[in-house]
Length: 277
Image (cartoon, rainbow, N blue to C red; front, side, top):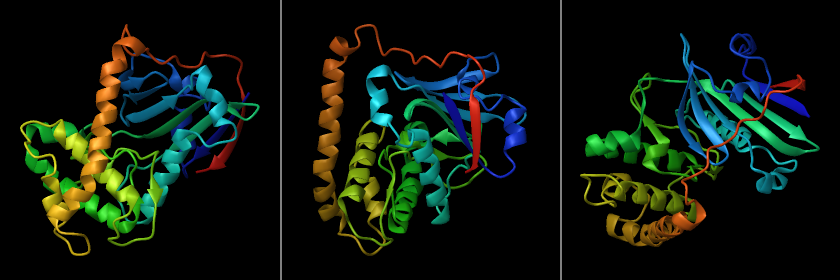
C-alpha cells in the first residue's frame, strides 16, 4: 500500500498539526469531528477547531474498486475541477489537500481536505426558507455556464450561499466538465438545468420549478424562456423518473436503510509520496 498526497502551498504543517499524512487517519471518527452526510462508501465530516476543516473521504466498496484501477479518485477529480473553475473566475472553496491510498493501482481510500465555512449554507436549505435565493443562484449558474463550467451534479443542495463569501459557489463538483466559453446550449448545460429544475421541484413554497429560468434566460445568447423550458423539460423528466425508480426500489435494495460507510482501519504507517496540488 502507498499513500500519495497532493498538497497546496504551505498546507503541510497545518495538516500534520491535526493528523499525519495517512489516508486512514483522516477517516477516523473523533469527539472533534461532526458527520454532515454519508452514503454507502463516503462521508463528509467537519473537523472542529480554531480553523475548522471539511474532510470528504471515500472507501470504495469491494464491488467497485476495480473500476478505479489507475483512475483518479472522485476526490482528485473534484480538486482538479475546482482549480480549473477558479482559473475561469468562478468562486469555489479552496482545496488544501487530496490523499489517495492504492494497492496495485486500485484505489483503497481517498480524502479531500479544505477549509470549512461554518456560516455558509447549502442553497437548497436556504431556498426552502426564502425562495428569492433562487434569483442570485440563477444568475450565478448562468455566469458559470457561460464561463465554460458544466457542474454535472447541479442541484441547489450542491451550491453554497452566505458565509465568508457573498456570492453563490459550488460546494464541490467532482462530476464537472468544461467546454469553450459562451452562451451555447449544449447537452451538458441542459443536463445541469434539468438537475437544477428537479432540485427546485423539491422546494417549498416554490411553486414553479422552472421559474428560475426567467432570470437565467434574461441575458442574451440563449432561447427565450418558453423555448428554453421546452428544451430543459426532457432532462428534468429523466431526473424525476430516475428519482421515482430509486424510491420505489429502495425497500428491496436497502430494507434496513442505507448502510453506513466504513473508514479504513488504522495499520502500519504507509509509505507516503507528496506532490504539489
